[in-house]
Length: 314
Ligand code: SN0
Image (tube, helix red, strand yellow):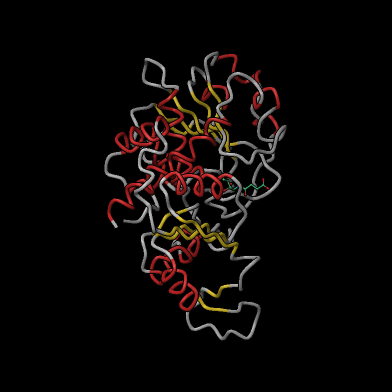
C-alpha cells in the first residue's frame, strides 16, 4: 500500500474517524510497529512533517531513521543513463534499494523543481523511489501533492464542523518566493471528497490543474469568495499555466480581520510555515479564528492513521 494521494484512500470519512480515534488514545496500537523500521528521506527542509511522522511512528512502536538526502548524504542522480561526472554522487537505482533493504516503509519529501511542468507533474523522483526501494511508500510532500497535510486539514475541519454544510475557501495569498502548487492541489482533491461547498479564490493566472480541483467554484473576487465562509485556507502557490512564475504580489490578498467582515464565524487555516504579515496578518495568526497550531498537532494523527493502515497490511 502506498500513500501518495487521496486516490489511495477508499473511505476518506473512515480514515478521518480512525485518526480522531488515535488522537483520543495515541498508544492503543503501540505494539503494531514492533521491530518495524520507517525510513524518512528528505530532499527538502521540514519541521512539522519530520517531527510529526517520527512521533506517529513512535506511538505505533516503530523505529525511525531519517536522512537529509540533500545535505548529510550523497547527492542523488535521478536521470537514467546519466554520465555521472558532475555533482551527483550516486544513482537512485543504487541508493534506493539500500534504503529499502534497511526499512519496511519509506517516506520521501521531494519538492518540484518548478522549471519543467512535465517533469514535476510526472513525479519522476517519487516514482523512482517507489520503484527502486520496493517498499510501501509514504509521501511527505511530492512535487504535486501533500496528502498527509490534507488529511490533517480534514481532521481539523471535522473537529470544527458547523451544524450546516460548511463553506470552505482556498485563498491564494502573496509570497516572496515561487512555491509549489502541492498543498493547494492536495487540499483541493481532498475537499472534493468531503461534503462541503468548496470555493477557490486567486488572481487570474493562478488556476490550478483541473485534475485536482474538479467541480470547485473559482471566484476571482476575493470579497465575494470570503462571504459566509466557515473555513478560509490561506496558501500561496506559483502559477501552473505560466509554470512556476510569480504573477502577482497583490498585498490586498494578505488575509486580515477586515476581509472577514462578511464571515464572522470563519476559522482560518494554513499549513505552516507562514510568512506573517505577507500571507496573513499577526492578528489572524494569533487570534481566536486561527486553527494553525491545531492543524500542526493533527499532523501526528494523520501520519499515525496512515502508518497504522500500512503496518496492518505488511
Ligand atoms: C512549502 C510549500 O509547498 O509551499 C512547504 C509547505 C508545507 N513551503 C515552503 O517552501 C515555504 C518556503 C518559504 O520560504 O516560506
